[in-house]
Length: 112
Image 1 (spheres, rainbow, N blue to C red):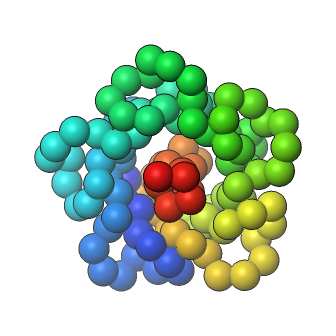
Image 2: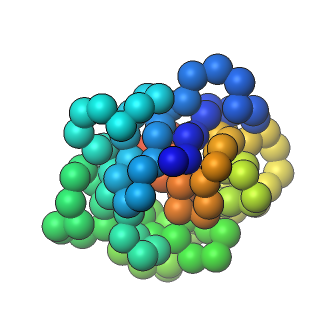
C-alpha cells in the first residue's frame, strides 16, 4: 500500500492511499476510490469507464488521453513536481509506491 503526502516529506497525514489500482482520499482505504489506475492511464472515480483524465509516460504526467502537449507534472524518484521539470519544491512525496502512485498524487493535487 502506497501513501502520498503533500509537500516535500512524508511527515504528517497522507492525502492519498493507493491500494492496487484504486486511490482513496486520506490514510485508509475506507470509502469509495477517487481515482482508478490502469496501465499508464488514470481515470476519475471507481472504474475505467470513460476517458482517462491523465496519461503517464516515463516521468511525465499529461492531462487527458494522450501525451501530446505540455506535462502537468514531472515525477522523480518519490517526488512529484508541478510542470515540466524538477525545478523547485515538490508538491507531493510518495511512500512505498511507484510511478503511478506519484502520478495519482499529481492528478489529485492539480486536476481534482
